[in-house]
Image (cartoon, rainbow, N blue to C red; front, side, top):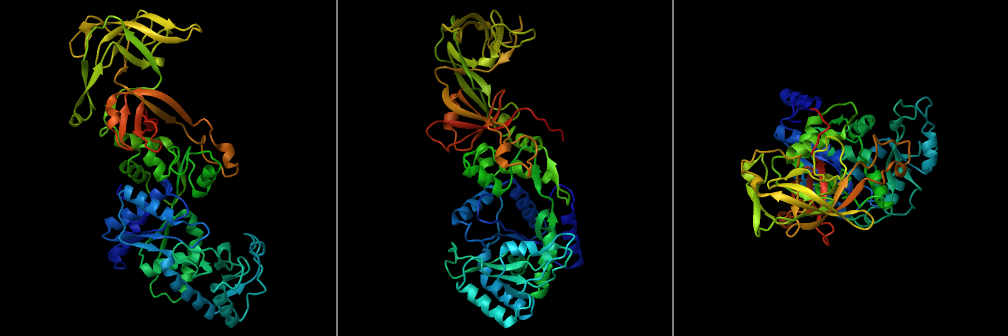
Length: 543
């Protein structure tokens, strides 16, 4: 990683210094059964950063070894996500490219007496595997003659047997202290049509077998994966040691990215989609890449966050405020600012008689290069409903009867009358303005009670605005049903009015809504101009 040293970077440096490798070749191997999330962004960033720093390259390899769950549609969407993140792979590969190679390596294990065809059920296999304190029980088929296993394995490939009836298992040890090493399954029967290979194969390798063979073929120098695969590394090495591979890659594991308040993991996200609790894989409340893009996150902010979290071998939980800090820091200088009123209250300036007036405001006071804009101003405007109180508490710094506030970039106004309906609900305010108080005039005779934003009633445009809170409170608890943890009030919708300049916005274009936060245009539902809250203005994170 680019931010200082870490154990993976140190390993690569030592490998190159010793002459073991001349450069770094890494791979990113997603399964095309869903979309990428921020955890994948960490793996992406680590793999591509290491390869770039050490003059190598990265393969994009789709782990398509389970035709029952995979879809070419996800292949294209994942490629789009990776490109959006700003990463470019050297070559596109698929696990299915290597099916013949894997089949050949499986035969090597059979011929060495290190694999056998078994007919016990998955439940039986699970029960017979044993526990951390009890050794496993050998299958009755463990010593099946290799000629018989070879014949059955070939016939499995041709589709002679139903799913679940036979597996090919490695013959390692049923009393191994690592349960994963207790005669694991190498191949299982799947009779679904594969989206790339059609019906050529009726057997498919398990990931633990496919992974090292793929790394071997691609000559991966540093096979980097998350910590959940640490216990699988002895099996990774065993397959390479026993399938006559002259080149032996090495696997290294790093801690996964866990974020408080977020639901991460394809299985959980898929359930939320199926239960109708979210608006698809690209829901802005998700930390999928497509969800973050729709919400207005930018790739650089995401990568800055991941690099700042570092690379370690200890799992930890990151505060959502840290992610939001890096997104905010990335947006605040590059983003134009506009006024948006989320809960409009009409204000009629009764003594205003001008026509065609406008006020000038900077697009971003921290970035003069973004220029200025002209904002129409007339005798009818909207302000935030919360910026007016009829009976304000002491210290209230906004508009109230008989009090003055400054309209940002414009004039002082004073509330003279409150207009209500028959139920007592406030419909509008009648105010007066002081022409001498225009911004930039140097007026200093008195100070207003506050400074509030506004939009012109005639020229502002209506928009739907969404603000979000966390999908869950705190840290996701695997012991509690997912649906029970979901915050059903994590979206608030507003019928807002925004400066007309946003009518030119493209999909995902970001703005800072003054006093509210950062928002991005969302064309997912084009029937109405829509903006999603990206991140608030205030930060709870202290670097």
